[in-house]
Length: 331
Image (cartoon, rainbow, N blue to C red; front, side, top):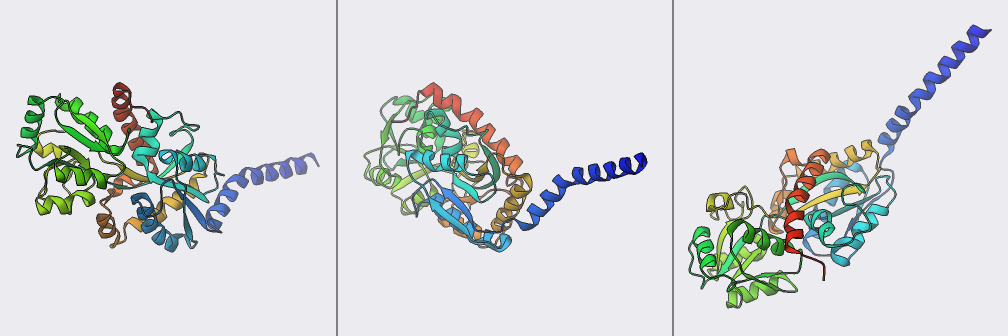
């Protein structure tokens, strides 16, 4: 009798031990069983929204469920990002954003009610947006080295247009000053389009902005382009050198876009979402659609959750000291 009870106990214990893996397997097979919401903390029609919709269309094919975009605007992306942080970690609420801002820069300039590392699970790095360093035509420099020499000879006389404290162009301008020993003024605009109008008109001297805003004017000869702020040349403008080639190695300042899930989202769910996103990015039409938006698909080796987390931490280590030293605070 005692032997029978012992055998029965061991069988029950073995069954109980198998329950977590069985539950995980069942969840992996059934997820997703309803539509997935992707919160974009920016307005409809903007770059983040447009990129998210391109990817969401193709994620549906892999997941067998609708992927719905919800725009939550306000406070430079912090309201929508906070919604993601507080969401149930079941894989049915994700966030997609220009994460250079929402998951790096914002944490250095705002008092956030969430932790950009510990309150999110990385899902996939989707795209990066190399910027182009520009001047008005009247600047007497033919390349980046000549521009740096001109700025050094004229400290505090030139001006760079940007869209606000902590914006990609603003922090890029501060890093440029730090790396080159130059000084110039910063002028704030409501939009990059307004700043572009002023640099064409000669009212400001410098800009660092997205290719889709700049390239038509560069080709028309109304402004000058000196370098791309990335390791590789642009597919859409291969004649513009990288900063490494132009003589300012390591001056990388590219906003980037990524998917995130709430902390605690099961690993198997993250894996399934990542697979769907990777498959979407492999679609032959995606690079062309991204190019129209001024962004490029992230390399395959950077599309894993682990690579996204490592990249985020590297960006924090790079940019937080620059932002803190400059004393940038939200207005």
